[in-house]
Length: 473
Image (cartoon, rainbow, N blue to C red; front, side, top):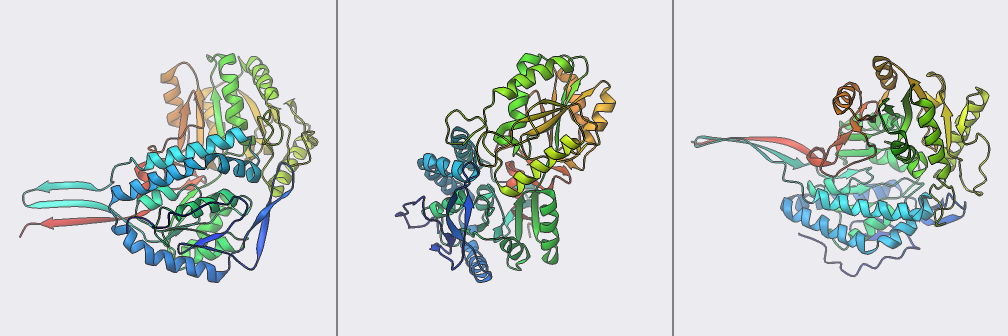
C-alpha cells in the first residue's frame, strides 16, 4: 500500500467536493463563500452531515493501519511527490486563493510556493526513533508510533501523513476552496481514506472534535475557539495541538538604522492585511528615536496600496470575511471614541472598493490599557508606543495573555539575546520577524497554544511515544 493507483485526477477549479474514502462526494446542502474584494459569491461547497463525518472517520481508521506499515522514508517520498503535484497547479491554486482569501495574487503565489517548500522540508526530516541504550546485553529504543485518524488541521497534513496517520482536513467555511482541491489532488498520491476533506458549516467542527473515533485534533485559529476545541476533546482525552492567537510585540532599541528597519516593520505588521497570527501587533520604539522611526514607518505604510488582489498594483487586500471586517471596524470606532492619535490611516470607511477593505492605520502612542494595545486586531491596524527603560518595556511586552511571537531589533546582539531570553513567547526573532522553517519547531506560550508544529516536534505531535526494552536471555 504505497500510493493510490488513481493517476487520472484532473482538477476542475469551478466545482468543489468533499473527499471521502478515495472518492469525490457531494451533499444535499451547499454553502458559498464570498470574494472579499468584490463581495461576489464563490462556487458552492458541500455542507457535511454527521453521516459524512462517520464515513470519513471509519475510512480513516481502516486506511491508517496499512498506511502506518508503509516505511517512514516511503511515506516521506509520497508526500514529496504530492508537493510536486501542488507545484504543477500552483498558478491555478494561487488564483483560487486570491478569490477566496483576498490577498494579492503575487502573495498567493508565494504562499503556494511556501507550502510546497514546507512539504518537501518535512519530507527530509529524520526518523524520530531514538536508541537510548545499545549494549551486547540490552537495547532500549523509543519509537514514535502513529495515533491513527486526525482532523481539524490547516497546513498540518505533511507531518501527520509522514508520521503514519490518516488525516481529515476540515477547512474554514470562509476559505474552503484551496483546501478541498488539495485533498482532491491527493487522490492521485494517497490510498483511499488516508487524506480526506470535509467542508461544512459551524456544526462540522464540534462533530469532529467530539467524535470518539478521532484520536488527535490540530487546530489553528482564535484563542476563544481553541478553548472550545479543547473542551470538546476532553471527553475522550484526545491529543491536541493548538496554534492560537498572538499579540506579538516588537522592541526597537535606540541603536537601529531607522531607514533600514522601517520597511521591515511595516511589512511584518501589515502583510496579508495584518491577518497573520505572528504579525507584529505592537511596536515599542525607544523614546530617543521614536519620532524619526515613526516618520519613516508612516512613509512605508503609506506606500502600500490597498485593492482587489487581482489588481497588479495592490500590496494589501481586504479583510477576509464580514465578521472580522465588522470587528476591525468596531475597534477603529473605539480608537475614534477614545480620541487616540493616528500617525496615518483612518477610522472611517475605506475608498479602496466595495469589499471588506480597511485603510492601513497606525495609532500613535496610545495608553497601554487601550483596546488597540490589549487586543489582537487581526487587521491592518497597529499601535506604536514609546519606551525608555528595558525592564519596563519587557514588562509591557509580556503583559498579555498571549505569547506566540516577539522580536527585538538592535545592532547589539548580546543585548538582543538578553532581551529575547526574557520575552515570554514561543518564537523570538532578532532583527527580523515572521520567519518560519519546516525543520524548526513553532508553538505558542501562555494562551497562544499547546504543543508545536514543524520540525521533529511537529512529527512527534502526531505520534504516541512507545519505549521498548530488549534484554538478551
